[in-house]
Image (cartoon, rainbow, N blue to C red):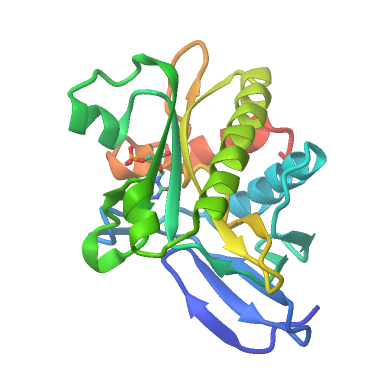
Length: 236
Ligand code: TMP
């Protein structure tokens, strides 16, 4: 599988076309941003961690019946994926209060939630990815009712698989963000990435943060946290 031309460069990944019109190649960068690009930096080796961890998670989820864009890991930073059109929603699940949820609702970080919370943000950098609900999504034609039901059901299944897996390696899955894509034949599948950039991981015992919050909040030990997550999942 060869890259033909670069189609897109995002904050953390590049996407290339291939000779196969249904296959893209994603290439993970070490670049890191936060606060809608306001804070910029580099996390050495992050691209490798995010590529390999995402592929590990996609394979685990596929085994549990969740369709994903994953095709084949090509090298440490690059993966062949199914071509999709991204549904412009950041789909967030929260098991424990943290981040913007804690800020917006005045809830202490670390407070367990009685049920998982599903949130949607409309992916639009110029607007700062505003929070939207089902009505906004249907009214604006961002997704149909059927697509939204599929996305919600798949997202809760992803949450259960991830909660169980990370708990088994001593990590609490506090919250995460995923994205879905639509294939040429209209199927909704899990796309984008699952990594310490897009999840909050806390050590079960010490509650130490093992994710991108170390970068967002200038806590130090960013690379070590990413490396520790690779060890936990058995990839290093
Ligand atoms: P939040 O608490 O800042 O809304 O973040 C919720 C989850 O979404 C957290 O696991 C980090 C992840 N996330 C992203 O993947 N991309 C983003 O741009 C933001 C703001 C959060």
